[in-house]
Length: 112
Image (cartoon, rainbow, N blue to C red; front, top):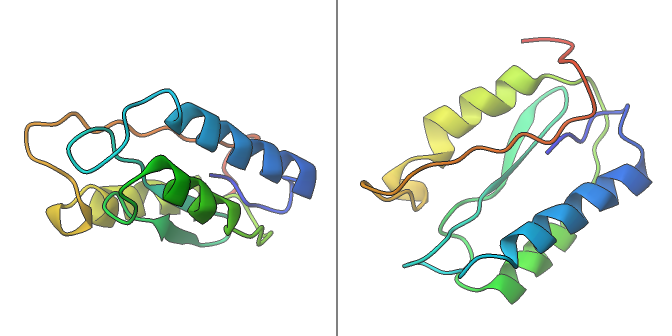
């Protein structure tokens, strides 16, 4: 989720609302759909690992707690973090279950 300086606070809240609404369309939980969230700007941060929340209400509270940082748009850092840490068994990824990555950004990456 893009938290760069070109995303204003209103649009950042829209991104968060979209994530919560999207998750609400799935059966949520350890044996069902799992959602992780990585925010990125000049750096990338795993705000929510796949196995952090066991139900939709907890996930929504976690998304609400994410704060806007500002900075550049280094989308590549988010992709690297997702590849190296999010989609791992330690973070809740399951073997034989499809991994889907959705990138929400307002534009072109300004860096790696």
